[in-house]
Image 1 (cartoon, rainbow, N blue to C red):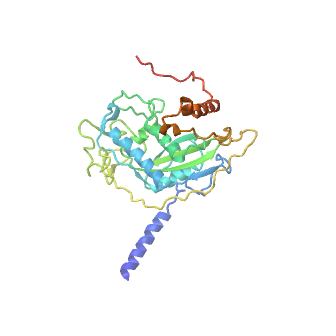
Image 2: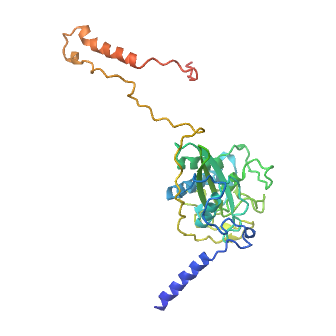
Image 3: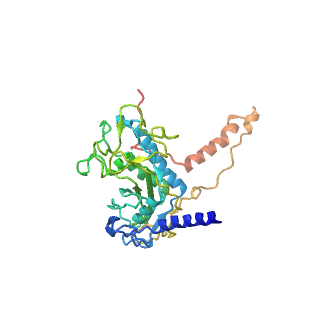
Length: 354
């Protein structure tokens, strides 16, 4: 009995610690944290009655993690002649960071928020991507495109060592790209909001990482530690089972503010966020928005089809040429009238055979 009481008190204490996070504390963004007095409502920049949260289901989360780790794994191996990574961590999902991202996207502001720190992640930073598309595009396809903006920027592939500067006008690559390669970042939480303005769907993605890049320096705290020898040679717990060039998922990362001090991994098993159940509005015809035409009826302009051509001549060799091909010629003549010959496309390029 005493044992059960002790276990119950331990669970309650853990719950109280989780629930007692003061997001309005002065040490968190000077009391202006995005989760301070958060009511989970959309802010004024979001179009009224035309905004909805995208539910972060398991397939969406897996897509984000797989895209991150797949590119980090390729880069760590020395893609594009870049230096190999000595101990690049594997990215995992973090629900506390996802909670911060959820509050950020409810502002509908495509910008890099300055302060997104949490009690467990004092050096957290955010990346964002805005994709505009028509309703025919799926949310997952739009997400893939948003992530590709971070992983494959217009970069100079011939540069063997990435140059990073905290002065944005001096660096050749965006912060989002460096953030993907930050080897001391091993956790991420993302959220997606979509809104219509005016007839295009705007999908805003924001991902909060537990370790940002603004503290990076060339030697003391680089974007990632390189090596001239084997990839992942400094991973204490060995390589990941799937991503061989990354460290094991239980590998401790070094402190984000520099140095060689290792940081304990946080066990974050909070339940997933509940998405807002506000459906996107229907497409209403107005003087500004044209009507969406119906799909054309493929049989609307077709007359009554003739009977199938007589193929009995195949079994009777005594038929005359006219008997053999009379109805076939009639059928072919009908199709010629039905489907007119199309003119050549002047914009189609064909390969010249030498």
